[in-house]
Image 1: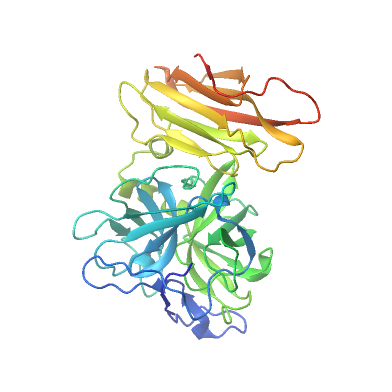
Image 2: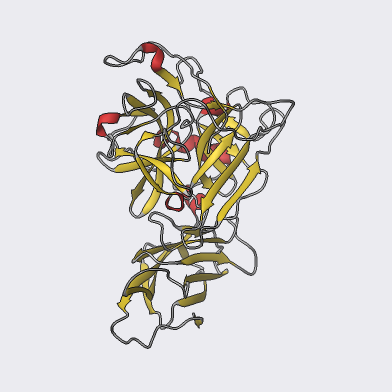
Length: 418
């Protein structure tokens, strides 16, 4: 799906090898603006398209990917139901509000799900916050935040990514996913740029096309997209696409530059007016392990008051997703793991919910671990966030059983008492 008319920004001296200097690209696409807040309809481009080469994969595997429509058409990642991280040059000079949207295809039904939100804020910013030290000439500090008028629902189709809290670890593989490609992709797929990440710190890092697998490079329209790794089981945005140096945007070549998100961790939280990472991600987290399955997991804080983070629900078939809520001490909460009765074509090995594990960490550093066997494939666990607790980690453990062997304990619809 294209994002408007292509615009190239020649930046000269950053060329490498035999790549011509005028091939250095500011890789967004122009979205013409008429008046204060008009967003144009996405058009089919006539030139080269982003993520050159790479693999085509189902879009549901990258549920944090969003489109950003501002002065350029770019990518972005959702880091909170009301906040999107993108590149500063994508929103530099924007007029009026910006728009954020996503499109996802359900892997089981084929239904296409899409939604959008506008930015919101004072007239001076309209909810768009480029880094205050962004330099449009050198493209230094090329990172920005967009605050949305209302939160996106966190569902199986749209998830958040975590912010890194440590410098880049050497060699960890990451991926950029975009809706567009230099060739046709089947419906419901994205093109994926995947490569190991260079270690260390600093304001930016680069990846050469020769290190990608399969071969890939970035081009117009990939700006603002997230370079996302899986660290400790969690999808984490390590980089924001800033620039690319490519021969012709038709064959994988050159290098791609990313803004290092870890360097800007504190600025991100300060701009969002969030005190710490726990307030962003939640003090109660739910994840899954084992076999991928058709189903959902989730968490919600209930009486006496709701969580600053809305009720969140996510899929049991996407690596890296976690659901979070900020529950007050003594507040009731509900945690759930539910497998759909229809698991699709899984052969003889059918997913089964084995158990829920819950690790609670107290203020004095002690932990309590509970392992709760699941007698059914649909479990809702009602409990209370302890008065002395600081965090709670819940895991839906999914196994599988062979349909050639009789098994009578797979049912649906039970609840567990606290």
